[in-house]
Length: 156
Image (tube, rainbow, N blue to C red; front, side, top):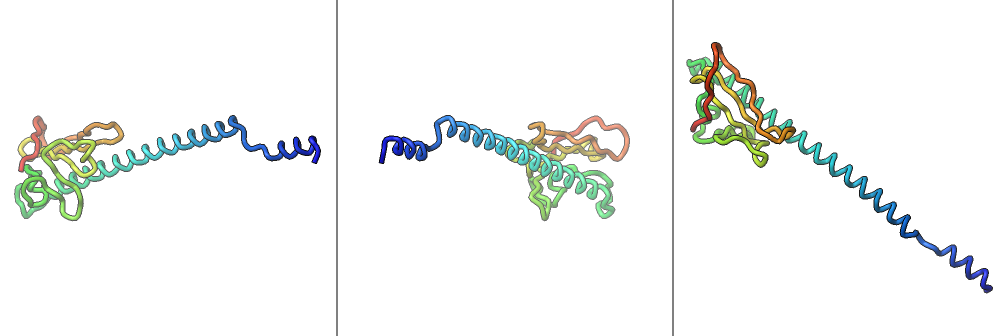
């Protein structure tokens, strides 16, 4: 083996340079950051959709309560218990929705909804946590007629 042959063998055995390795690491880091941001956005949209859907379910339940002729009063529920017949916070049967006394938060906003009675049962308003704005959202007042002035927090 001559000196020229040894130099040629050495050139063939060279690995990646530090610059090439750093470029690959940077590219992988950028791709990972993009995936994490996209995943977080997807989670927030899913949470927001679930909270809005729960608010819609509570709204429909309150509308059904007011429309129920067997109750004979034609007003919206004035207590959380009236939503399901249970005492305290009402959990709508067949769902994981809790009609609670306290405003929904980031921690419980996927399941908790707050129902406000307006004008002694003549209307209602719903509060739910909006993950898009990261704050409590309030639905427009729903009423049976007349002008609404006051809404009160749910009671047991």
